[in-house]
Length: 134
Image 1 (cartoon, rainbow, N blue to C red):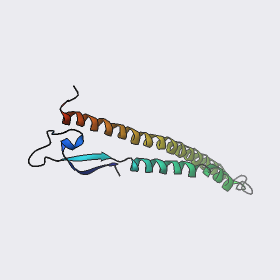
Image 2: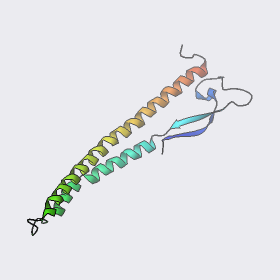
Image 3: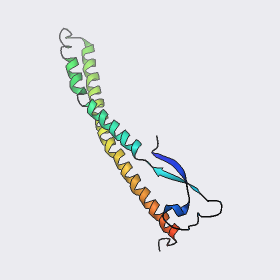
């Protein structure tokens, strides 16, 4: 799921100028890459969903461990259980933070790609029109 696809064949003159180098008797088409922000935005939404779903997990884990101590005083396994629980709490919080951070980064990629697409399109329009950025 890359977010970029070849969407068709297009002549250079179709990119904004008349009678460009892509015109010719044979049609001279070139593949045109078009960015789609859909996959990036769906991935951002998925990361946000995971962030939200992980929110109550630490509390649920704590609730699940309530009462475990009763009747197990003196067992070595109890200390191990506490260490494992703390480890999972750290991992859950780290995953939650990563998901929250990732959502914003994925949206930024979609925005950047859109700006890049427009910049490239306008640069081809200058070439096709013969101004070449002069």
